[in-house]
Each structure stands twice: as structure tokens, then as C-alpha cells.
Length: 197
Image (cartoon, rainbow, N blue to C red; front, side):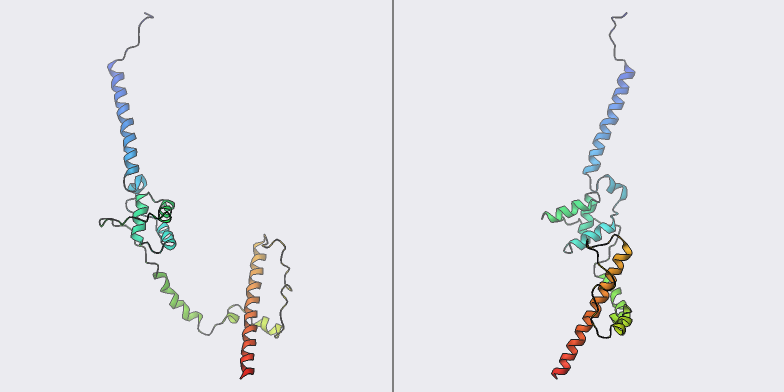
């Protein structure tokens, strides 16, 4: 009996056929999902596109409509880098079909400007930089004398400090010095205009 050759029986052939069918079906189904509109991620999410990506791309390329951006993001599976590369390479974005209805509504870029006028009157109701940054004490103590540039702090030779509080203090000091210097220049210019008249 050692000379018997292994034979294929019907149950093993059926098992091989079923397994082969599922492997081939899985392989072709995966390729269909990747080539379909939006890929597998797009199908799972429907027409939903990340609004942050759409806003980011629309800020980089204001000539594009948000609908075109959302269509391209849906087609490439939400890959903002691919959409950006496509625009930068000069190919442009395809116009979405009329049947494309995105699920999110991105407000136009001009909408955030509407709250600004309501906040502008609160800033312009007599408040200047001196009162906003509490520099009246520095004006009183300076008494018109030029402030020394490094009197309060010594700047580090390496530029930025590793300490966050020190960096913030240095930046606030620079801001205050710039505001006071601009005030002195404005006062000098007004004095020159008055003396010329």
C-alpha cells in the first residue's frame, strides 16, 4: 500500500472551489471599491466630506468653488493632499455632476466678515492702544524721555528663550516700546506741524 498516490476526492474539490470563489470575489470587489467614486471610505461615509479640509483648500485656492472641492475630495476618498496636488499641477478640478448633493453646507468665505463689524464699534468707542494695553503709567514715568531699549531685560544672544513666560514678556515689552515710539513720533510730527503754522 505504500505505492498509493494521493487522489482528489469530491469534498476536497468542492472546498477548493468555494474557497477560490470567495478569494476571487474578495479580490475583484476590493478593486471595484477603490475605483468607484469616493473609494471604500466614501461609500461608508456617503457624501459627507470633512468641512475642515474643504475650508483649508478653499482658503488656499479661493478661485475654486466649495462644490468642486467637495466633489474632488469625495472622489479621491477625502485626500486633501491629492486635491491640492491636482490644482497645483494645473489640471484643475472637474465640475461636479448636477446629481451631486453634498450633505454639508460650508458658509462662503465672506460670512465670517459679518461678525467683525459688530465687534469693530466696541473697539472704536474711544479706546486707543495706550488704554487698551495700560501704557498710561509708562507714559507718565517716561515723561517724554526716551526709554532705554534694554533696561528691563537683557535679550538672550541665541534669539528666542526656552522659557515661555520670558518670551511672552519680551514680546509684550517690544509691543509696548513700539506703541510708545509711535506715540512719540506722532507727537513730534504734530509739534512740527504746529510750529510750521
